[in-house]
Length: 240
Image (tube, rainbow, N blue to C red; front, side):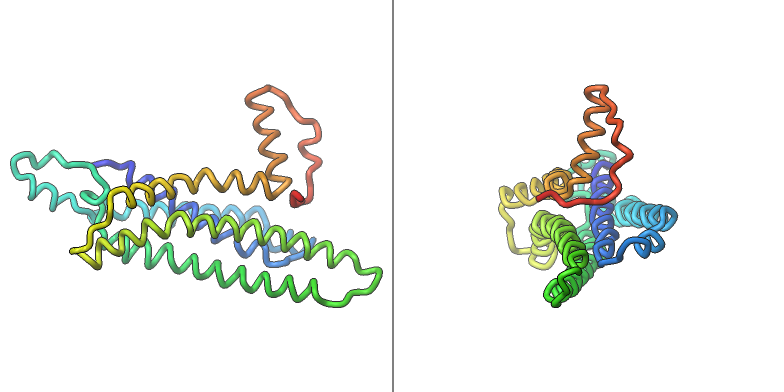
């Protein structure tokens, strides 16, 4: 009975909750207001909550919501031997009702509503007529728009990568006579694994501070070079 499947579920939930936690971060809070709202303590609490919920969601099958007993009963000659395949050990009721309908779909809808509201507010601010000496609001909200676009792209890639697999799970649960091609399922699984590699690439290409920090870590640990200006990066700039 493989624990790796549940570890994968933990990190999958963590990835979604991280995206959900960062979505309010692009709501247009300025300067000192941002520092007073997003404090290190609150950020730590948010990270801790994301990990806690992810562990609860991912480890739920290990507490009994699985097909272990069914596999042991079907293989009465060797009850301790279980064919460790996803559909053999993971309950589709858990994947669809609990994982998808409770912990995946609602956060996706929640983030979609947030980003639509963010884009609406920023567009409204950018379309306002400002005086000749009011270049700062336009520059600020233009930067916020680029940040929101970057985070929305991460959300879109997550949905594009994970919805096909959850759709296959729904078909498998609600239509027992329907057969999903194994090649299609394999592609859907491959897309979910590839999603984890997409986010660093998106951040590196879209957000200058992330790219600079990544290069600093790479140079420090792989080339033993230390950037003396590493602590001089204050503002999050968007790559053009």
